[in-house]
Image (cartoon, rainbow, N blue to C red; front, side):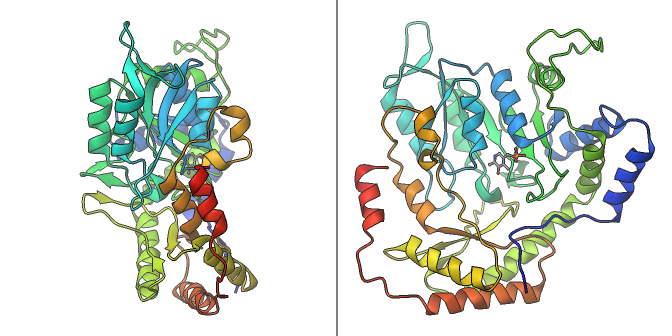
Amino acid sequence: MNISLSAPDIGEREMDYVMQVLRSNQLSMGPWLEQFEKRFAAYIGTRYAIGVNSGTSALHLCVRALGIGAEDEVVTTSFSFVASVNCLLYEGALPALVDIDPKSLNLDPSAVRDFLRMQCSRSADGRLVDQKTNRVVKAILPVHVFGLPCAMDELMDIAREYQLQLLEDSCEAIGAEFGGRRAGSFGDAGVFAFYPNKQMTTGEGGMITTNDPRIAELCRSMRNQGRDTDGAWLRHVRLGYNYRLSELQAALGVAQLERIDSLLSSRADVARRYSEMLSRQPQLVLPESDPGSKRSWFVYVVKFLGDSPSAVRDHVRACLREKNIATQVYFTPIHHQPFFRQCCPGPVPSLPNTDLAADQCLALPFHGRLRKSEIEYVCESLTAAMEAQPRVDSKPVRVLETRAVGI
Ligand SMILES: *Cc1c(COP(=O)(O)O)cnc(C)c1O
Protein backbone atom coordinates (compact mmCIF):
# COMPACT_ATOMS: atom_id res chain seq x y z
CA MET A 1 0.00 0.00 0.00
CA ASN A 2 0.99 3.59 -0.63
CA ILE A 3 -1.07 6.07 1.33
CA SER A 4 -1.00 9.77 0.51
CA LEU A 5 -1.61 12.54 2.99
CA SER A 6 -4.61 13.93 1.11
CA ALA A 7 -6.52 13.44 -2.14
CA PRO A 8 -9.20 15.43 -3.96
CA ASP A 9 -12.62 13.88 -4.58
CA ILE A 10 -13.51 14.55 -8.22
CA GLY A 11 -16.51 12.89 -9.88
CA GLU A 12 -18.42 12.82 -13.17
CA ARG A 13 -20.30 15.99 -12.34
CA GLU A 14 -17.05 17.97 -11.99
CA MET A 15 -15.86 16.70 -15.38
CA ASP A 16 -19.20 17.45 -16.99
CA TYR A 17 -19.32 21.07 -15.74
CA VAL A 18 -15.69 21.76 -16.68
CA MET A 19 -16.34 20.34 -20.17
CA GLN A 20 -19.31 22.66 -20.51
CA VAL A 21 -16.99 25.61 -19.88
CA LEU A 22 -14.44 24.30 -22.38
CA ARG A 23 -17.15 24.00 -25.03
CA SER A 24 -18.37 27.54 -24.37
CA ASN A 25 -16.48 30.61 -25.47
CA GLN A 26 -16.17 32.16 -22.05
CA LEU A 27 -13.24 31.00 -19.94
CA SER A 28 -13.12 33.87 -17.42
CA MET A 29 -15.53 36.32 -15.73
CA GLY A 30 -18.71 34.56 -16.85
CA PRO A 31 -21.87 32.87 -15.57
CA TRP A 32 -20.12 30.08 -13.65
CA LEU A 33 -18.30 32.52 -11.37
CA GLU A 34 -21.53 34.38 -10.76
CA GLN A 35 -23.32 31.15 -9.91
CA PHE A 36 -20.50 29.88 -7.70
CA GLU A 37 -20.46 33.12 -5.70
CA LYS A 38 -24.23 33.23 -5.31
CA ARG A 39 -24.44 29.65 -4.08
CA PHE A 40 -21.40 30.01 -1.83
CA ALA A 41 -22.86 33.08 -0.10
CA ALA A 42 -26.14 31.19 0.42
CA TYR A 43 -24.28 28.19 1.88
CA ILE A 44 -22.24 30.25 4.36
CA GLY A 45 -25.09 32.62 5.14
CA THR A 46 -23.64 35.95 4.07
CA ARG A 47 -24.97 38.58 1.65
CA TYR A 48 -21.91 38.51 -0.59
CA ALA A 49 -19.23 36.10 -1.77
CA ILE A 50 -16.33 37.10 -4.03
CA GLY A 51 -14.33 34.41 -5.82
CA VAL A 52 -10.54 34.81 -6.15
CA ASN A 53 -7.62 32.66 -7.30
CA SER A 54 -6.41 31.51 -3.85
CA GLY A 55 -7.09 31.68 -0.14
CA THR A 56 -3.98 33.82 0.21
CA SER A 57 -5.33 36.35 -2.33
CA ALA A 58 -8.62 36.37 -0.42
CA LEU A 59 -6.77 37.22 2.80
CA HIS A 60 -4.70 39.91 1.09
CA LEU A 61 -7.74 41.67 -0.40
CA CYS A 62 -9.54 41.61 2.95
CA VAL A 63 -6.53 43.14 4.71
CA ARG A 64 -6.56 45.97 2.14
CA ALA A 65 -10.33 46.37 2.26
CA LEU A 66 -10.19 46.67 6.06
CA GLY A 67 -7.63 49.46 5.72
CA ILE A 68 -4.85 47.60 7.52
CA GLY A 69 -1.49 49.11 6.58
CA ALA A 70 2.08 49.98 7.46
CA GLU A 71 1.51 51.48 10.93
CA ASP A 72 -0.82 48.75 12.04
CA GLU A 73 -0.91 45.51 13.94
CA VAL A 74 -3.36 42.60 13.94
CA VAL A 75 -3.91 40.16 16.81
CA THR A 76 -3.55 36.61 15.51
CA THR A 77 -2.12 33.12 16.04
CA SER A 78 1.28 31.66 15.22
CA PHE A 79 -0.18 28.13 15.05
CA SER A 80 -1.42 28.44 11.48
CA PHE A 81 -0.50 28.15 7.84
CA VAL A 82 1.94 30.92 6.94
CA ALA A 83 -0.53 32.77 4.68
CA SER A 84 -2.56 34.12 7.61
CA VAL A 85 0.44 36.21 8.68
CA ASN A 86 1.92 36.86 5.22
CA CYS A 87 -1.23 38.73 4.21
CA LEU A 88 -0.36 41.33 6.87
CA LEU A 89 3.32 41.54 5.91
CA TYR A 90 2.34 42.25 2.27
CA GLU A 91 0.93 45.56 3.51
CA GLY A 92 3.68 46.35 6.00
CA ALA A 93 1.44 45.49 8.94
CA LEU A 94 2.70 43.19 11.69
CA PRO A 95 1.07 40.32 13.59
CA ALA A 96 0.68 40.60 17.36
CA LEU A 97 1.05 36.89 18.08
CA VAL A 98 -0.83 35.62 21.12
CA ASP A 99 -1.02 32.08 22.43
CA ILE A 100 -3.51 29.32 21.65
CA ASP A 101 -5.84 27.26 23.79
CA PRO A 102 -4.05 23.91 24.23
CA LYS A 103 -7.24 21.90 23.71
CA SER A 104 -8.79 23.58 20.68
CA LEU A 105 -5.41 24.74 19.26
CA ASN A 106 -7.21 27.96 18.30
CA LEU A 107 -6.52 31.55 19.33
CA ASP A 108 -7.22 31.77 23.07
CA PRO A 109 -9.71 34.58 23.76
CA SER A 110 -8.29 35.15 27.25
CA ALA A 111 -4.80 35.58 25.77
CA VAL A 112 -6.23 38.13 23.32
CA ARG A 113 -7.88 39.95 26.22
CA ASP A 114 -4.67 39.91 28.28
CA PHE A 115 -2.69 41.36 25.38
CA LEU A 116 -5.21 44.16 24.82
CA ARG A 117 -5.59 44.96 28.51
CA MET A 118 -1.94 44.79 29.57
CA GLN A 119 -0.01 45.88 26.49
CA CYS A 120 -2.32 48.32 24.69
CA SER A 121 -3.90 51.64 25.54
CA ARG A 122 -6.03 54.32 23.88
CA SER A 123 -4.24 57.34 22.51
CA ALA A 124 -5.76 60.84 22.72
CA ASP A 125 -7.29 60.46 19.26
CA GLY A 126 -8.99 57.21 20.29
CA ARG A 127 -6.71 54.74 18.57
CA LEU A 128 -5.72 51.53 20.35
CA VAL A 129 -1.91 51.51 20.51
CA ASP A 130 0.43 48.63 21.36
CA GLN A 131 2.74 50.27 23.90
CA LYS A 132 5.67 48.01 23.00
CA THR A 133 5.62 48.63 19.25
CA ASN A 134 3.75 51.93 18.99
CA ARG A 135 1.56 50.38 16.32
CA VAL A 136 -2.19 50.77 16.05
CA VAL A 137 -4.12 47.57 16.74
CA LYS A 138 -6.74 47.38 13.99
CA ALA A 139 -8.17 43.88 13.93
CA ILE A 140 -8.34 40.32 15.25
CA LEU A 141 -7.60 37.53 12.77
CA PRO A 142 -8.73 34.17 14.19
CA VAL A 143 -7.97 30.98 12.24
CA HIS A 144 -10.33 28.00 12.56
CA VAL A 145 -7.44 25.55 12.82
CA PHE A 146 -7.99 22.03 11.43
CA GLY A 147 -11.68 22.87 10.85
CA LEU A 148 -12.61 23.42 14.51
CA PRO A 149 -14.30 26.81 14.95
CA CYS A 150 -12.74 29.37 17.31
CA ALA A 151 -14.70 30.60 20.34
CA MET A 152 -16.48 33.17 18.18
CA ASP A 153 -18.84 34.43 20.91
CA GLU A 154 -15.92 35.57 23.06
CA LEU A 155 -13.89 36.91 20.13
CA MET A 156 -16.88 38.90 18.88
CA ASP A 157 -17.39 40.35 22.36
CA ILE A 158 -13.74 41.40 22.52
CA ALA A 159 -13.88 42.91 19.01
CA ARG A 160 -16.97 44.90 19.94
CA GLU A 161 -15.57 46.04 23.28
CA TYR A 162 -12.27 47.23 21.78
CA GLN A 163 -13.80 48.36 18.45
CA LEU A 164 -11.59 46.03 16.44
CA GLN A 165 -12.35 44.59 13.04
CA LEU A 166 -12.64 40.82 12.74
CA LEU A 167 -11.29 38.81 9.81
CA GLU A 168 -12.00 35.07 9.95
CA ASP A 169 -9.53 32.74 8.27
CA SER A 170 -11.98 29.93 7.49
CA CYS A 171 -9.72 28.29 4.90
CA GLU A 172 -9.75 25.00 6.82
CA ALA A 173 -13.34 25.20 8.00
CA ILE A 174 -15.93 25.20 5.23
CA GLY A 175 -19.20 23.99 6.74
CA ALA A 176 -17.98 24.22 10.34
CA GLU A 177 -20.51 25.72 12.74
CA PHE A 178 -20.34 27.66 15.99
CA GLY A 179 -23.62 28.06 17.88
CA GLY A 180 -25.51 27.01 14.74
CA ARG A 181 -23.84 29.64 12.50
CA ARG A 182 -21.33 28.78 9.79
CA ALA A 183 -17.67 29.76 10.00
CA GLY A 184 -16.99 32.70 7.71
CA SER A 185 -20.22 34.51 8.61
CA PHE A 186 -19.17 36.08 11.95
CA GLY A 187 -16.52 38.62 11.10
CA ASP A 188 -16.41 41.75 8.95
CA ALA A 189 -15.16 39.28 6.35
CA GLY A 190 -14.30 35.60 6.11
CA VAL A 191 -12.00 33.78 3.70
CA PHE A 192 -11.95 30.27 2.23
CA ALA A 193 -9.45 28.29 0.15
CA PHE A 194 -9.88 25.57 -2.48
CA TYR A 195 -6.41 24.08 -2.81
CA PRO A 196 -6.62 20.30 -3.57
CA ASN A 197 -6.05 19.23 0.05
CA LYS A 198 -9.02 21.24 1.34
CA GLN A 199 -12.51 19.82 1.93
CA MET A 200 -13.57 21.09 -1.52
CA THR A 201 -11.28 22.13 -4.34
CA THR A 202 -11.12 24.16 -7.52
CA GLY A 203 -7.48 23.21 -8.16
CA GLU A 204 -6.46 26.64 -6.92
CA GLY A 205 -8.99 29.13 -5.66
CA GLY A 206 -10.43 31.12 -2.81
CA MET A 207 -13.51 33.03 -1.66
CA ILE A 208 -14.29 36.09 0.44
CA THR A 209 -17.57 36.19 2.37
CA THR A 210 -19.03 39.35 3.88
CA ASN A 211 -22.27 41.16 4.72
CA ASP A 212 -20.67 44.55 4.11
CA PRO A 213 -21.45 46.00 0.66
CA ARG A 214 -18.40 48.29 0.81
CA ILE A 215 -15.97 45.42 1.49
CA ALA A 216 -17.65 43.33 -1.22
CA GLU A 217 -17.32 46.09 -3.82
CA LEU A 218 -13.70 46.88 -2.92
CA CYS A 219 -12.69 43.21 -3.14
CA ARG A 220 -14.53 42.74 -6.45
CA SER A 221 -12.69 45.72 -7.89
CA MET A 222 -9.26 44.85 -6.48
CA ARG A 223 -9.32 41.24 -7.71
CA ASN A 224 -9.92 42.62 -11.21
CA GLN A 225 -7.11 45.20 -11.60
CA GLY A 226 -8.92 47.92 -9.64
CA ARG A 227 -11.60 48.29 -12.28
CA ASP A 228 -14.70 50.28 -11.48
CA THR A 229 -17.84 48.22 -11.08
CA ASP A 230 -19.51 50.21 -13.90
CA GLY A 231 -17.99 47.75 -16.37
CA ALA A 232 -15.65 50.17 -18.17
CA TRP A 233 -12.84 47.74 -19.00
CA LEU A 234 -9.94 50.17 -19.14
CA ARG A 235 -10.89 52.45 -16.28
CA HIS A 236 -8.91 51.66 -13.13
CA VAL A 237 -10.02 53.57 -10.07
CA ARG A 238 -7.71 51.99 -7.48
CA LEU A 239 -4.62 49.81 -7.18
CA GLY A 240 -5.69 46.34 -8.19
CA TYR A 241 -4.44 42.83 -8.85
CA ASN A 242 -5.21 39.94 -11.11
CA TYR A 243 -6.69 37.63 -8.50
CA ARG A 244 -9.52 36.36 -10.75
CA LEU A 245 -10.97 32.84 -10.57
CA SER A 246 -11.43 31.32 -14.05
CA GLU A 247 -14.68 29.82 -15.32
CA LEU A 248 -13.04 26.37 -15.30
CA GLN A 249 -12.29 26.72 -11.62
CA ALA A 250 -15.72 28.18 -10.85
CA ALA A 251 -17.44 25.26 -12.64
CA LEU A 252 -15.38 22.83 -10.57
CA GLY A 253 -16.41 24.81 -7.49
CA VAL A 254 -20.13 24.65 -8.34
CA ALA A 255 -19.94 20.87 -8.78
CA GLN A 256 -18.09 20.43 -5.47
CA LEU A 257 -20.44 22.77 -3.61
CA GLU A 258 -23.49 20.88 -4.92
CA ARG A 259 -22.24 17.80 -3.06
CA ILE A 260 -20.51 19.51 -0.12
CA ASP A 261 -22.69 17.69 2.44
CA SER A 262 -21.56 14.30 1.19
CA LEU A 263 -17.92 15.46 0.83
CA LEU A 264 -17.98 16.55 4.48
CA SER A 265 -19.82 13.49 5.78
CA SER A 266 -17.41 11.03 4.16
CA ARG A 267 -14.55 12.89 5.84
CA ALA A 268 -16.39 12.73 9.17
CA ASP A 269 -16.82 8.97 8.67
CA VAL A 270 -13.08 8.53 8.12
CA ALA A 271 -12.38 10.59 11.25
CA ARG A 272 -14.79 8.45 13.28
CA ARG A 273 -13.02 5.28 12.09
CA TYR A 274 -9.64 6.68 13.10
CA SER A 275 -10.94 7.69 16.52
CA GLU A 276 -12.42 4.24 17.13
CA MET A 277 -9.27 2.43 16.09
CA LEU A 278 -6.91 4.68 18.05
CA SER A 279 -9.02 5.08 21.18
CA ARG A 280 -6.99 2.55 23.18
CA GLN A 281 -3.66 4.32 22.76
CA PRO A 282 -2.85 5.88 26.14
CA GLN A 283 0.00 7.95 24.72
CA LEU A 284 -2.15 9.67 22.10
CA VAL A 285 -4.61 12.54 22.38
CA LEU A 286 -7.20 12.35 19.59
CA PRO A 287 -8.81 15.46 18.02
CA GLU A 288 -11.00 17.37 20.46
CA SER A 289 -14.65 18.12 19.92
CA ASP A 290 -16.63 20.91 21.48
CA PRO A 291 -20.33 20.65 22.38
CA GLY A 292 -21.08 24.20 21.14
CA SER A 293 -19.59 23.72 17.73
CA LYS A 294 -19.38 21.42 14.74
CA ARG A 295 -16.00 20.64 13.22
CA SER A 296 -15.56 20.40 9.48
CA TRP A 297 -12.88 17.71 9.12
CA PHE A 298 -9.88 19.21 7.30
CA VAL A 299 -7.13 16.94 8.67
CA TYR A 300 -6.88 14.23 11.32
CA VAL A 301 -4.22 15.37 13.79
CA VAL A 302 -3.14 13.35 16.82
CA LYS A 303 -1.03 14.63 19.73
CA PHE A 304 1.75 12.62 21.36
CA LEU A 305 2.01 12.79 25.15
CA GLY A 306 5.08 12.33 27.35
CA ASP A 307 8.25 14.22 28.21
CA SER A 308 9.62 14.23 24.72
CA PRO A 309 6.66 14.20 22.35
CA SER A 310 8.54 15.43 19.30
CA ALA A 311 11.12 12.60 19.60
CA VAL A 312 8.35 9.98 19.72
CA ARG A 313 6.49 11.74 16.92
CA ASP A 314 9.54 11.90 14.69
CA HIS A 315 10.29 8.22 15.33
CA VAL A 316 6.70 7.29 14.44
CA ARG A 317 6.88 9.45 11.30
CA ALA A 318 10.01 7.66 10.14
CA CYS A 319 8.43 4.22 10.74
CA LEU A 320 5.30 5.20 8.82
CA ARG A 321 7.38 6.58 5.96
CA GLU A 322 9.06 3.17 5.64
CA LYS A 323 5.61 1.67 5.20
CA ASN A 324 4.73 4.22 2.49
CA ILE A 325 2.38 6.15 4.74
CA ALA A 326 2.63 9.92 4.35
CA THR A 327 2.28 12.16 7.41
CA GLN A 328 2.87 15.85 8.04
CA VAL A 329 3.85 18.01 11.00
CA TYR A 330 1.08 20.62 11.21
CA PHE A 331 2.15 23.29 12.10
CA THR A 332 5.64 24.58 12.51
CA PRO A 333 4.63 27.85 14.21
CA ILE A 334 5.01 30.93 12.05
CA HIS A 335 7.32 32.65 14.56
CA HIS A 336 9.79 29.75 14.08
CA GLN A 337 9.79 30.01 10.28
CA PRO A 338 13.21 31.01 8.90
CA PHE A 339 11.90 34.12 7.12
CA PHE A 340 9.98 35.41 10.11
CA ARG A 341 13.02 36.91 11.88
CA GLN A 342 13.80 39.11 8.89
CA CYS A 343 10.24 40.34 8.58
CA CYS A 344 9.44 40.81 12.24
CA PRO A 345 12.26 42.31 14.25
CA GLY A 346 12.10 42.56 18.02
CA PRO A 347 11.97 39.92 20.70
CA VAL A 348 10.71 36.46 19.76
CA PRO A 349 7.27 36.08 21.29
CA SER A 350 6.86 33.64 24.16
CA LEU A 351 4.07 31.25 23.17
CA PRO A 352 4.37 28.10 25.34
CA ASN A 353 1.08 26.45 24.28
CA THR A 354 1.91 27.03 20.62
CA ASP A 355 5.39 25.53 21.05
CA LEU A 356 4.03 22.51 22.90
CA ALA A 357 1.38 21.85 20.22
CA ALA A 358 4.09 22.10 17.57
CA ASP A 359 6.08 19.39 19.37
CA GLN A 360 3.07 17.11 19.85
CA CYS A 361 1.03 17.22 16.64
CA LEU A 362 1.08 14.84 13.68
CA ALA A 363 -1.37 14.79 10.76
CA LEU A 364 -2.26 11.31 9.51
CA PRO A 365 -3.35 10.52 5.94
CA PHE A 366 -6.82 11.96 5.58
CA HIS A 367 -9.43 12.39 2.85
CA GLY A 368 -12.98 11.29 2.17
CA ARG A 369 -12.11 8.32 -0.03
CA LEU A 370 -9.72 6.65 2.41
CA ARG A 371 -10.85 3.01 2.62
CA LYS A 372 -11.42 1.08 5.84
CA SER A 373 -8.50 -1.25 5.04
CA GLU A 374 -6.21 1.75 4.53
CA ILE A 375 -7.25 3.33 7.83
CA GLU A 376 -6.61 -0.02 9.52
CA TYR A 377 -3.17 -0.24 7.92
CA VAL A 378 -2.28 3.28 9.15
CA CYS A 379 -3.54 2.58 12.68
CA GLU A 380 -1.78 -0.79 12.94
CA SER A 381 1.47 0.70 11.65
CA LEU A 382 1.17 3.62 14.07
CA THR A 383 0.52 1.30 17.02
CA ALA A 384 3.46 -0.93 16.06
CA ALA A 385 5.74 2.12 15.74
CA MET A 386 4.77 3.35 19.20
CA GLU A 387 5.43 -0.04 20.75
CA ALA A 388 8.84 -0.23 19.04
CA GLN A 389 9.75 3.21 20.35
CA PRO A 390 13.39 3.59 21.38
CA ARG A 391 13.85 4.52 25.04
CA VAL A 392 14.45 8.20 25.44
CA ASP A 393 17.07 8.26 28.18
CA SER A 394 18.39 11.75 27.86
CA LYS A 395 16.31 14.63 29.11
CA PRO A 396 14.31 16.42 26.42
CA VAL A 397 16.90 19.16 26.23
CA ARG A 398 15.62 20.95 23.15
CA VAL A 399 12.11 21.31 24.47
CA LEU A 400 13.21 22.62 27.87
CA GLU A 401 15.72 25.04 26.42
CA THR A 402 13.35 26.54 23.88
CA ARG A 403 10.69 27.09 26.53
CA ALA A 404 13.13 28.67 28.95
CA VAL A 405 14.22 31.31 26.48
CA GLY A 406 10.78 31.55 24.97
CA ILE A 407 11.76 30.84 21.39
C1 LIG B 1 -4.92 26.72 2.93
C2 LIG B 1 -4.86 27.85 3.87
C3 LIG B 1 -4.70 29.18 3.42
C4 LIG B 1 -4.34 29.61 2.03
O1 LIG B 1 -4.87 28.99 0.98
P1 LIG B 1 -4.22 28.98 -0.48
O2 LIG B 1 -5.40 28.76 -1.33
O3 LIG B 1 -3.24 27.86 -0.52
O4 LIG B 1 -3.58 30.30 -0.74
C5 LIG B 1 -4.76 30.19 4.36
N1 LIG B 1 -4.93 29.95 5.66
C6 LIG B 1 -5.05 28.69 6.13
C7 LIG B 1 -5.25 28.50 7.60
C8 LIG B 1 -5.00 27.60 5.26
O5 LIG B 1 -5.10 26.37 5.74
